[in-house]
Image (cartoon, rainbow, N blue to C red; front, side, top):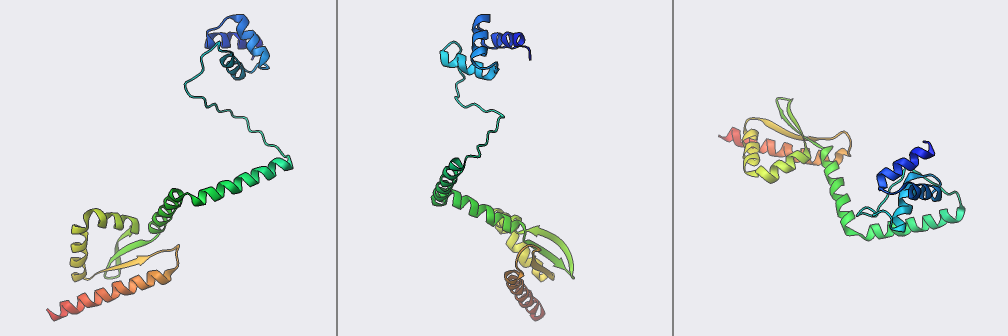
Length: 180
């Protein structure tokens, strides 16, 4: 941008005289943002209520001493984060939700999958509407509905144990039906 245009633009934005805008731009190497900061430091222009500024510049230093200091700071930050229990609790909750989103409850009848629901949805439904969900599950067992857990992402040992419990419950319900 032409220097004259920069002076005019700064003059309009900061509501200052031409000479003040020119001096500010000359002192800031013709950078309009630095000129605004210069004017704010001099008290000519009132700064924003928040004192945080962002720039798109990324400056990286390849000095070995700075890297060592940075890595030491990084280690200290990691130690303080591990001591902060709120971050640990939040991460643990996120991991549990992610795990439950990747385990599905399959509702089957005659080896045909009727519904495939993530475990997170089942837990939320049980939490808010257990008085509906539990009786429906019990009634469903009497109509030969089967429940199974499945997951493509996780170890199937624990899922197989839960499925074995579901199968035992189905067999008990079938035996009760036969007795009636």
